[in-house]
Length: 261
Image (cartoon, rainbow, N blue to C red; front, side, top):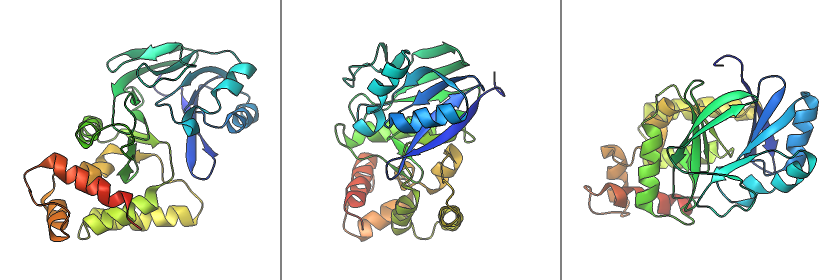
């Protein structure tokens, strides 16, 4: 099973990535916000849709579900606590999704913060993480429904996965995320190298996703909110006072990013 699956990157809208996982015949769509983009990719690769996986309820992740179900009735897996009406396999953290076509197994991880019921999917055999809008390449999602404490806990849970885990997030936000990261930690050499490398990728029209957990731990400020250099920047810029409060540090970073130009 480990070597039998492939991932198709399906760009949609201005900056979304939809994902199709397949074995050459059967295919699973992750967060299909745009049905036409998914159907075009399935046709181009002669694949049959067999399941849909959803991470959270936002329309750019779920907007194509009805049209896909009209085309092919398939099971829809998604968070139990995010109010998605099309979900007929409701999932909680700790659940395991076992699919027959393609043969694939995923662990469900609760990652509230961006939305109240957001989940992620971890395929241990392939070292793949589908993080939705929780963990981005170089960043994290906004706190629309959850708290800073929830999001920090969610991100640290994802950061505990093996360093070589590939992170398939849902947006091409990387360069703007890295610009903010450099403001938060300007002397991080690994971050400087990443900015150069990912800028080159985007210049060539290449995606910066997937990333890897190890790279995120070295360069993503939202996984580094406990780092002395990041805390020093927050204090020096007047964004926090107590250097011993990791939730306050994370909240200050997220609020800064919300208004970062």
